Length: 126
Ligand SMILES: [Cu+2]
Image 1 (cartoon, rainbow, N blue to C red):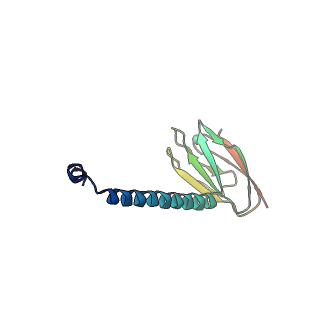
Image 2: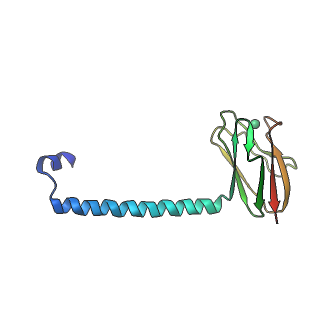
Image 3: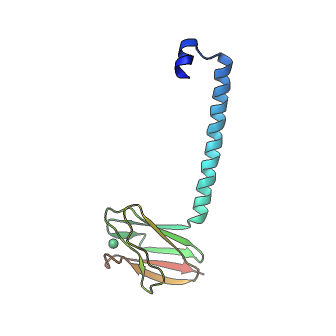
């Protein structure tokens, strides 16, 4: 296509139409991306990053029904184990995620199964 255009040159009207289509696509894509972001923000209510052998935020306060997503952005593997054993992840490699939806109010402490000195807490408000 490029070589044909280079040799003959695209007709001006065609180029203008193509530009209009590309601009239209751009707007459509932005709307789509916005929709995906909005959907993701709605589904993922809170996130905890695991980095440098720590949970960040260490203490997280959320309303009942919140899905909390832990993401390991550290180089080392980590896991999430509730002190009351209500939830329990496998060892998460770098960029792995684990999520748990808190359906009941209360304070939920957890730790890393591989490094038990790593502790965190989710405070779930009614
Ligand atoms: Cu760990």
